[in-house]
Amino acid sequence: MAIYNYQAKDEKGALKEGTVEAISPGQASEVLHGHGLMVISLEEAGAGFELESYIPFLNRVSRKELVLFSRQLSTLMNAKVPIVQSLDILRAQVTSHVLKNVIVEIKADVEGGKSFSEAVSRFPKVFSDLYVNLVKAGEISGTIDEALNYLADQQEKDYDLMSKVRGAMTYPIFIISAIIVVGGLMFLFVLPQMIAVLQEAGAELPLTTRILIFMTNLFQHYWLVLFLVVVGGIVGFQLYKKTIGGKIVWDTLKLKIPIVGRLLQKIYMDRFARNLSTLIGGGIPIVQALHSVADIVGNSVYKRIIRQAADDVETGKSIAAVFAQSAQVPAIVTQMIKVGEQTGSLDEILSKLAKFYDKEVENTLGTLTTLLEPFIMIVLGLAVAVMVAGILLPIYNLSSIQ
Image 1 (cartoon, rainbow, N blue to C red):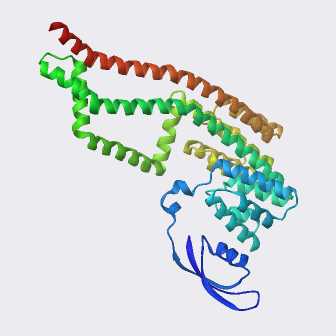
Image 2: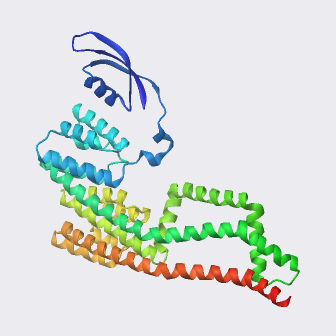
Image 3: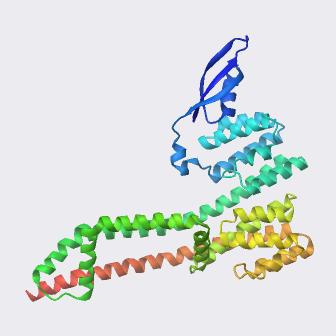
């Protein structure tokens, strides 16, 4: 938030001066206008503390919030409610502080003479190119309410897809995290006491026990170093992923992970087919549509392929011809796009392809979950076997000798 000094006139024409707190000059003017003041001058006095500036996660608008915003705005505009009034209604209803401020900015721009598509294009972190292009197409054709409703449908499908992925991964992540925590506690508090008994006995210890002793000493005396190494590695990896080269390397590696890579490929193809179908169906030129989809598909490998396709389409080539040269694009995608280009029904073919991949993702998630459960049990069994072979058996042998 920021503090703004203002000069304004009230309804009787009397001059008023003071300060107002707002996220932007547009919001400040709106606040003053709501109090019956006509703004003469407005200057920023100083910035206040804003938590979102320090924690980027808080500065995001979730998919669910965006779906609700699009759906409700579509309903209001279909009921012939003016856009400015519709935005006012939505601003009072939304719970997201970030989205509320974005709506205020959009409303100020629309009141200033900008189109709705121009206003939302100022917030690329909230509204994707897909969103802006479809809204613009809706404005041109006079069907902006239908465009917003269609956008809400597509966003809802994408949200459902990612919810399925997160849901399938929750159980394995929880179990693996629990194993790591329990293992760490064992090395810090339980194993040192048991190992001390073995070392006092002076007997020759098996290899498994010696390895456990080494790891226990490592955890006991160098836990801070290990912690810093792990944290430093995670932070360094995250920073590396943000570089152009690092992102390409990581996105390429993800596609090569057994099972998971196939799942990610299907998710990217689903996203590509659904969004490109949406843009083409909305009347967006194919080259512009490809560039928009390239930015939202979510993987730099496919981003490069799709952008190459856009460049080649401008020179007269087909999308299928470009995709056929890439090993990362499944043959079924290339074949269906080829059929769509030949029959002039590319948007319909892509829509069917998206539905196909919806089912494929769901089936792959089920298979992955089924395979992960026995894998986790095997890991647990191995951990127990190591503990028994390394600690309990030597102690049992010592007690038997005595």
